[in-house]
Structures are given as C-alpha cells and as structure tokens.
Image 1 (cartoon, one colour):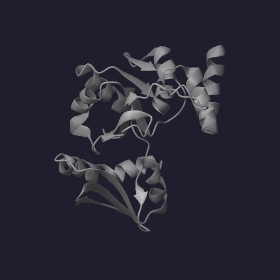
Image 2 (cartoon, one colour):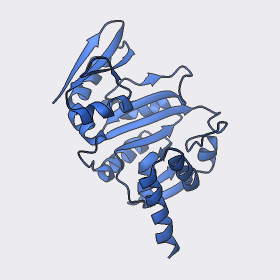
Image 3 (tube, one colour):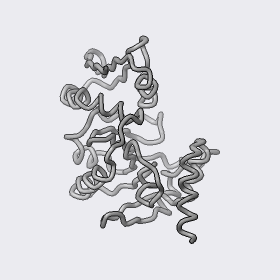
Length: 227
C-alpha cells in the first residue's frame, strides 16, 4: 500500500507512506528522506506549480515505486520513442545516459528509468512540463549539475541540466562530463538517432559502481560483436 500527501508551508513537501519494506528500500535512492518508520519526505522550494505537479506524482507513485523496486518491467522502448519525439519537437539537444544508453547499443539490460543530460534546462522543462512529478530542483553548486528534473511517462524520466565543467577532474570516472560530451557517439535505434557516451567511459563507471551484472552484459555485447 502506498499513500501520498502534499504538505505546504515554508517549503513544499511530497510525502510517501508505505509499510512495504522493498518499497521503503528504494525511496532513499529516489532522494526521499525517512522521517518515521513508514514515512518518507522530499522537500522543494514553495511554488505555485507544486499542487499540479503533486497530483501527477500521487497518481504515478505506486507504479513508479513498483518499477524502482523491480516488481514491474517498464516498457522502456516505447517510452524512449515518445521522449525522443517530445525533445525533438522542442529542439532540445540531449545526451542519453545510464542503462538506457547501454540498452540502445544492444546490451541486454532492462532500464528502470531513462536518464539524460542537457544544457538547456528551460527548454527541457517546457517540453516535459505536462509530465513533471517533481518541481525541478536547482542545486546551487551542491550537485553534479545546475538542475535536476524528474518526470513520469509510464516510467521514470530524469535529467541533469548544466553539468559541472570539472566532472572529469576527480578520482572517479564521469560518463556525463566534458570528455563524454566531446566523445559522444550517435547510435541509430528504431530508426531514431541518439547521442550516447562512449562505451569505455560507461564501462569504467559501471565497474567503479560495482554493478557486476551490468559489466558482464557489456562484455557479452563485445563478444557478440567480435564473432
């Protein structure tokens, strides 16, 4: 059982309550802070748009959490086609990332969300405004990008806008930093073109995160291609 609530005050708080332990486990990964045994909260600066966005969130929350907990396989292929159309219509230039970037290459993986990076935050919000399930958050220099956005299109859509220029200057590998953008490759999938990070950077990030099953899937793709 999943229940939600919007609390308005000095900020806008999206509240999720559930007694299902596997759903509780994914909420912190979605940046919801646990405040009681069954209550998780994510706060946003107060805005006039929050009630409308919250209504979409409330409708989406059960399915969103079920997908995040791997209870349900999202139909990522169809959702990615729709997203491509929305961003193309708005003339937004974007870089597909994460598991979906691997999937369009042919890696045998089922993405639980669609991640991308973009420079034009405002154009992205205009293109996806009707799908937002959280108010976009400005990082004020506290994150890897200037803005974070989350939408729902039958599966979770997340983007980082205005990525920091120093992402390549750390001990960990970045597959969305300046080098990834400079070396981005164009992949054709279902007759559509997608810009994706270079595979070696995605492999390095995957290894560093300890995602062993994903590493094996990438390696399997390489073996298939070498035959």
